[in-house]
Length: 40
Image (cartoon, rainbow, N blue to C red; front, side, top):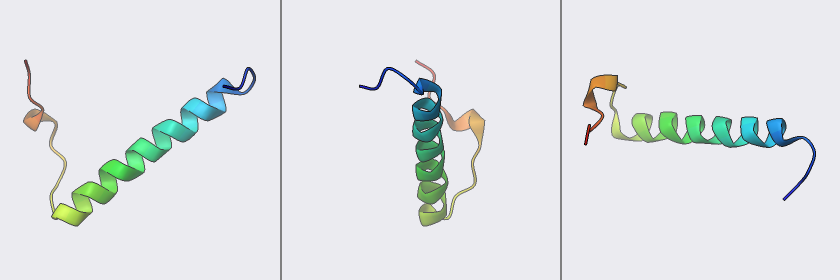
């Protein structure tokens, strides 16, 4: 684990998560809607 530039690592991980979300939605031909989130 790197001691410096943790904000860049966090930014990269967040961007990767966003890209995976968008790609997943495009692959399923769905639109994002926040009310579909399961609330436990």
